[in-house]
Image 1 (cartoon, rainbow, N blue to C red):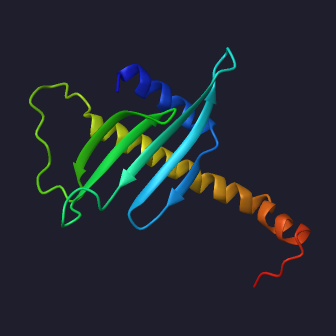
Image 2 (cartoon, rainbow, N blue to C red):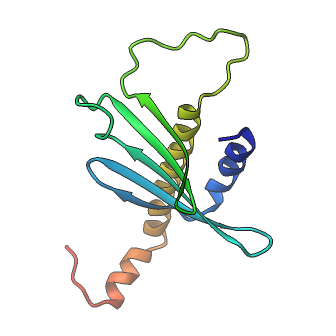
Length: 134
């Protein structure tokens, strides 16, 4: 993943509607982008928890653009030692970039949930569908 693509995603994630699929073994965040020519691009970020090793001590990140795998990285869940930078300006690793984007997507989903509750969107849905909720 280039720095330009990372910066582009970093700037558009806060402005997009993010959908999420969670399971015990993975989280999948997806969002769409329509460019100035009207072309639709679908971005998906995967966080896979139990597909890496027997102890589940690593997480694997995958990044897809229009269902094509663009980047993948593995990162330790429990860092035993902090990384020591070898120079004054340390480059951000691919795993760190993907983790940052996934964190941003997660924060955006939480924000979307909060906004739907504050605007009573869920309550109005329940009232219009004539369902009783405890």
